[in-house]
Amino acid sequence: MIPPIYLEIAVLAIGLFLLMYESFSNDRNKSMIAWLAITGLSSVLLVSFFIPAYDEAVQAALPYSQFYRADCFALFFKRIALLTTILVLVMSMEYKTVLRKFIFSSEPQAGLAEFYTLPVFACAGLMWMASAIDFVFIFVSLELVTISFYILVSYTRRNPASLEAGVKYLILGALSTGFLVYGITWIFGITGNTNLFALRVMLSGLTEVNVPLLFGMVLVLIALGFKIAAAPFQLWVPDVYQGAPTPVTAFLSVGSKAAGFIVLMRVLDAFMAAPVLRVKLIGLFVVLAAATLIYGNLAAMPQENMKRLLAYSSIGHAGYLLVGIACYGAIHAAMAIQFYLAAYLLMTMLAFMVMTVVSSHTGGDDIAHFNGLARRSPFLAFGMLVAMASLAGVPLTAGFLGKFLVFESAMQQHQYLLVGIGAVTVAAGFYYYLKVVRAMYWKEPANESRIPMSPVTGLAIIVLSAAILLLGVYPQPVFSMLKPAETTHVASR
Image (tube, rainbow, N blue to C red; front, side, top):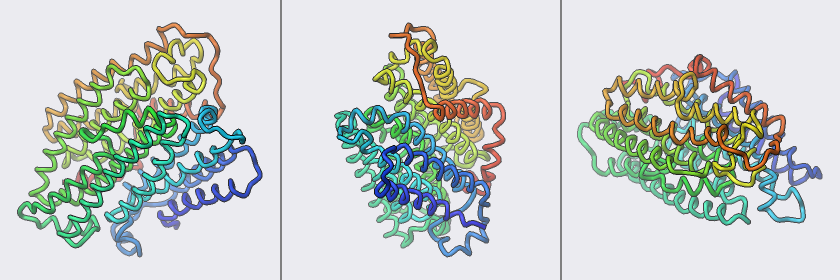
């Protein structure tokens, strides 16, 4: 039996191999790097389905059990990280014409190999975050991901918007890291431990609020709030999303958010073991969820740029996920969060995939650049229609079922205020998502020229569209990968 930790080792080996191949190969076609990365990651993804999750007894016997968890919860998020990275690499190949404009060099394909390789290292960090159950390991994994994103966000160095986005992301990323390290320091100083499962045992016997411990916990939650773009820690998102290269924006929107939420769930599992802290934390996340829902969806309504619209949309979807976090104790809360993240992966990646093709040929990513897309490319227009419908929550799509499961958990926990706010913000979402549909089907195009795309991009759009529609009516493929809620601890009480 292959140990699950070999998955991350394989991804890291793929990244190192790609760097060596690029350094010593005379092949001038840098697209080969992307193809090798896609092939390697696809192989790892396929192997992950043949690796069983460890139960408690096997887990305890592992030599690395103090910092690494190999349950179904972790394996599910590893697959999300792998699939996200594969799709980002497909987008990156479609985006190479835009990259060439902003990376001036005598060599036409200069810089492309590194742009294809860095996501692989970020993927390894995301996968380690999925299994991390020790604050030190969480920090190290997070830094591998964050440093990769620092480079990728500002990669088009001749583009002032990309450089501005990189500086903002660097400053606020460093700030959030500072909060995380300072919070870990306080928690370790009070408890003498950084292992989340050991902390859970220690905190279960806590009978009164320990103020220094509470202070450290709040600092950690603030840091994670930056990572998942929860209000009021979301101010970096619109500018960074707009300035970063489109494939990197997609990676930030899906991969970084998914990893942030699994770490948040692991950490909350330890903190909520203390009955005196549980009520305070649930109240805190109710407020965070409400604020994030309202801000993200209302701020998206006036946007005319697709990247900024999807940035504020990303904040709004973080709000729906926080509704699930606030429903600690609901029978299917953990399952709802995991399914929502899977649906969010599909519909967001589909939207960015279409946007990458369109913006590469129209020279911009405003909604106006999508005018008349149904005439220029009915295939791309239909793909974006499916993505917008799912993001809005139209029935028979994965996005609708994800929202339904989250709201069901809220009803079980009598969080009627969050359900009411969620219903209003869903209506707001219909307005700004359908603006894109109106531009594609009812507006006149600037010109009638066709928009070409590579066969692999077309195949990816077909698969993502089909998956969104399939999971909207038959969600069992995802449910079969999810561990029963009572054993994930996040929703076990």
